[in-house]
Every structure is written in C-alpha cells, then in structure tokens.
Length: 75
Length: 247
Image (cartoon, rainbow over all chains, first blue to last red):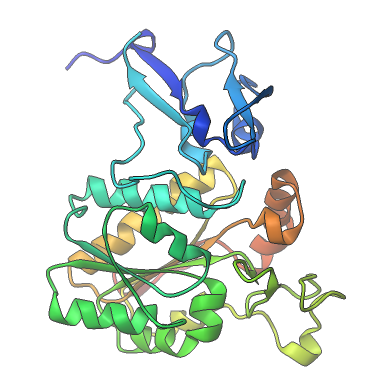
C-alpha cells in the first residue's frame, strides 16, 4: 500500500469550539500555534495555526480538550 | 500518516470549562470505543458532578445513578445485559467520597465493568471544595489554609486500595501532556479489552486539571500536576490480566 504523503493532508480548525485555554500552544513542538486577537461567538480568544511553521504532526488534536483540530486528507 | 478526525460519538461540543481535562478524557474514551467497534453496544453509568455534563454530548446510552452510586447501577446493567460494554465515568468526589463504598465493593466482587475515575483533587461542580484526593497542604474553598492531614487524614489513593484486590486491570494515567494522553489511551483500551474478554473489574484513574477551581492558569495547572500531584499519585499500569506488575 502506498504511503500517504504529508502534502496530502491539511489541518482544519473548528474555531467556534475553542475556549482559548492555550494547551495546544504549550505543546506544539513547532511553535506553530498562537492565541489570536479574534474572538469567537462564545467570547473566547481563539488559537490559530501559523501555516508556515505547521508540520501537521497533529499534537494539537491530541491535547485539545475541545475538539478544535482535525487532520484530514485533501490539500 | 493517518487522518485524525474527531470521533463521531462526540455528538456535540463539550460543556466543560476552558482547560478542563474532561474533554481530553471524553475524546480518548470515544476513540477507543469506536476503534473497538463498541460504539453501539456501550452503556455508561454516571452519578453527579461535572462528569454528568458528558451525558448531553457523548453519544452512547446513559443511565444516571443516585449520588456516587454509578458503580452499583453499572453493575446492575452489566448483570442483566452482559453482552454490553458497561463503564462508569465519575470524578473523585463522586466515586471516592460519596460513592467509595460502591466503587470499592464493585472491585472487591471483581465485577466485569470498567471504571474511569477523574482525579482533579477537588469537588469541581460545587465550587472547589476539599475531596478525599486533595493533597496535603492544598488550598480549597473548605481548606483555605491548606489541607491539614492531622485532622482530615491522608489523601485517598484508590490505586493502592485496589491493588490488593483480585481485579482484572488497574492503571493510573494523566492528561497533562500529549505523551500522557497517548499513554492514557493505551490504558483505557486495555481496560475495555479486559471487560470484553471477561477479565473482571478494570479501573483507570486519570489525573486531570481543574484550572477554574484551582484558580490557576492552565500552564500552572499542568506544572502543578507534574510537580505536586504525580509524586503522590504515580502513573502506570499496576495490574494487567489479573496479575500485579512491578510498577
């Protein structure tokens, strides 16, 4: 079976779920996450991905308590 | 590389406070149940506290027990529906203060259910009061000068209590880092596998942050778990397939 390439995946974010706790920011090995100044409808500042730094390791998926991140196929 | 998709069992956004560890544990349990093909045959037993918020957002069948009695009710469900996967999901105040008797006697009888106990060291939903698991010297709303163990006794270590019993599986995990969460998933999978193979009682205690009631940032909460909680409540697998480990 052919191995999937990194470029075949993308990270998506459900920012309406974010509560701005910062767990993802503290655990990201690439410093690719930052707390943005934008606020979601719940009133929380949301964590956003710096696409230039992100390696799609999906540790943010593992640590996020609020199901904000997913790694899915599709460039 | 594989896709990482939010489990379908998580039917709604969770309702926990920012930084609460329940969300991580909910997701890990959902992943394990889906991967094991148990999503449609699982019954969860809840009692009281923040754990009960899960009932609205986690798509298995639920039954709510009186305060603390999730283990007793879960055992009843398992006895009449042995083909179902039955688990209890409780906080430490719920399972180890109000419901300690039911929790321990389910273990003593080696009932074939899985217990997940979330240890954040306080009663969360009612405002951060001292729980049996509160650390010595820890400040809570009912121990504002810090827990005095000469009056209240030592913190209750449920793993040490259950380690002496002839149960199927016993582990303690944490959600304080990505590494801990990956290990926790392994423990929770082993616990459900123990039950589904008829291996007897399985218990996984999970160290979890409560930034709201600890009155700390999440960063400080995670440091607190690493530096103060883990030395008192060490992680690991303590019983596997009915045999004590060296942990």
